[in-house]
Image (tube, rainbow, N blue to C red; front, top):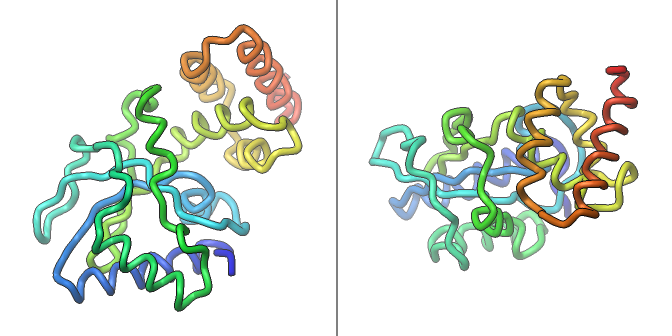
Amino acid sequence: MHLFGSDDVELALSRVGELLAAEGVTFAVVVVGGAALNLLGIVTRTTTDVDILAFARHRQGAHPDVHSLSEPPTPLPEPLLRAAQNVARDMGLDADWLNSGPALQWRAGLPPGLDARIEWQRYGGLWVGIVARYDLVFFKLFAAADSEGASSVHYQDLLALAPTPAELADAAVWVSTQDAAPEFAQILREVVAQVTRDLDYA
């Protein structure tokens, strides 16, 4: 089973939060990708997983500290991993549907100011921070330039985000720091030009 739309994503996260609360433990995670787009209502589409970009510190009953983001551990902490695997079994999801795949992004750096723009939601023992639309433009532009171009789901997600020319320019500056290869710079320029045409900015 895949997760379709925000209802499925929220159901899976809620069940994880319920299991964590039953154990008396709490985690705060930040998510990106298709799950974040669904939760923000930007798209309604199928996704196979929920990508954890970061963990955050938190105190019992308190809101997570937005300035305490850290790279997610691999593997995930045992209570969180156990809860996710139980939900995977009950909902028929992939075993690694909740994963820290985006952790590699920490090596190249995150968009500046990302932490202050995160939108937090609580599901029992699980705080979920959703990367803001502005920052999703950065990540999706990078993914679109790093994939098969305009036919990719990343490019279609980028169009759904409808970045303004200023947002697209900001994102392009950051994406250009992620890969120093000259051929990547050319691909990035082509993707930006295509977005500009498709969104009729010219």
